[in-house]
Length: 485
RNA sequence: CGGGGCGUGGCGCAGCUUGGUAGCGCGCAUCGUUCGGGACGAUGAGGUCGGAGGUUCAAAUCCUCUCGCCCCGACCA
Image (cartoon, rainbow, N blue to C red; front, side, top):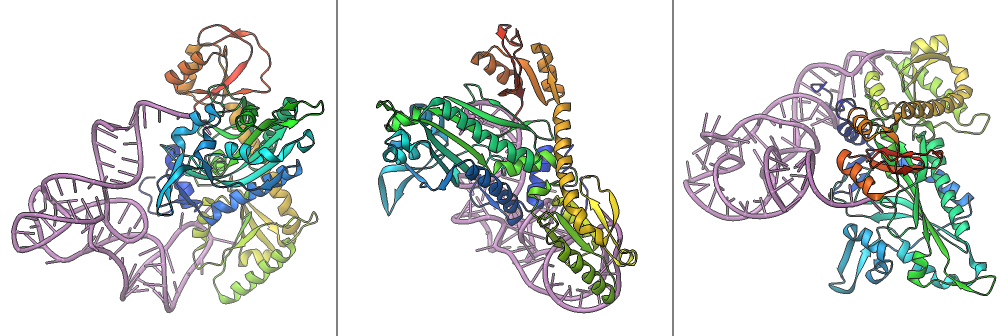
């Protein structure tokens, strides 16, 4: 396949997954490289996918009582230094502004890698009483983290995301909030991106710097590697105390509020590509697909062109809204190119359905509907299209999720010895559920020797007494190991 | 930071060993013929060969320095 004559040919997914990913992102026009190392230009098609998931997540966040607001891009050095573990964790990744206005600044300004420090300082005066709590804020912005190795969408120096920040009077309430955030992410991942996720807790080593604990959702890509798809942090009183935030509680005692923060980024565009894509390119879940149906008119004569156009117009008019009031996103491809070219064009871009309408179809009062995933073709009467398409899109959405779930299950294995563990990691990959004693040394040894890390301690992992695969000490439950992005 | 590779129209490359004033495919533009799985022909636009310095009558090509990118390693929430 390396000698394919077409410019839009892509690396085979089965030969070289990372090469395939880069090809798809570039050639499906999701994004492009930028003049700045490690940064990317998000193109309209890629941005539209981001907007779909962003809009849904924004609805969920607002529905759970949070309000959007904005904090500045710059964090004064002194603020970033206040929470010791936080600054230590982020230090190598922070970009600094040291000069502005033609002279060196008295105090360097960090370009936010995340906003916890700035927010804790900013809300200090807003929280005086337990009546001011909970304080539920959400920010849509960009952050910068200086990365050594970058990948389009998956790990870029600058990325777009949402960061929620909340403050609560009790630890219990904050813990519930951590769960609320994670649930928003699960809904977007599973119901919109059709990516099944496993929720759980990060190990001490993998948690957010400055957090008491971190919860996350973890997904499997089509190369069986893991990708962290969203994190939610219990900050406890760490940032509150560092910033000196206190409120007067019901019992007239001054207390530091409990904080949480949670984030979801443009990385999920990359996750969607890697969770569903195939040898022909992107496969998009209908709910976030910028175009759900690509119409390819087929004609030779001008007379046919007019007749096809009229038929398409009638279908489009009827498709505007179905009985449930849902519009179907349709693009009619009138470009002066051959039908075959257009077929490949829209398949590369992952459009769920293609609709071919030509003279033969008009004679039969039908159109040919082709499904992206298996390229199956079906003749559908023109008058049936408006009411059949929404249901087919819903079914397609469910099929993608079921397919991804089956793939994940087929690549998840239970292992009880280190020998078996190493064999599975090397020869099969995927998710591995294995006993772990909870010791950081064992965790580190596995990472160094196999490249697999503890992705998560799953919430639904049942109590199960066993021996840690590394040192044989008692393990209470299985944890999820995998090689990860 | 260590090892290796690469910078030539938008993209992918040849040319460099053996200096002689830049070429191919795709893409792009116009016109015509085409159109149910990546059409074809004709014409045309587009490049100070990553940058600086040097050798030479003459440098994409040889020499020196420099910048950038990719891969491997190291480092990583």
